[in-house]
Length: 172
Image: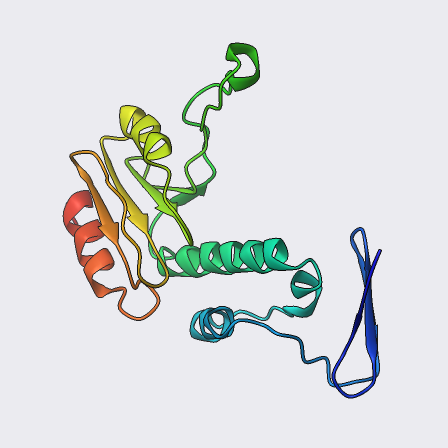
């Protein structure tokens, strides 16, 4: 159980999946980039339960919000979320195996949404199944990608290059 004092004299309690807040303004230290992302994507999310989990919760909020933002960006296409690319045999093999890209557009292009560091091995595994793909970042970011893949930073501010590339790659 985690109890946090809110500005203005109230408190908030988080225990497992349950959340309760009373009094105060509910102001917690939410990073500005998270608020920008939520506002730019037009999402209706309350960041307070995530912030109570600390840095890990804020990172989870940022990741979930950005995935929803990318889903809205791809709304004009046939998109599958977390489509299985490989059978997950990581536990059997004793190593980590990435088997689900975030999005698969029209069954041809994998799109991986990243808010932090990009795991090059993860992208290389997806490239085996999807020769064309993209790694998108909400703000600045860079990642080494294999041939046929592209990196798109600043997707929140300027989605046009991503849309243009996607249209050309799909032949539309």
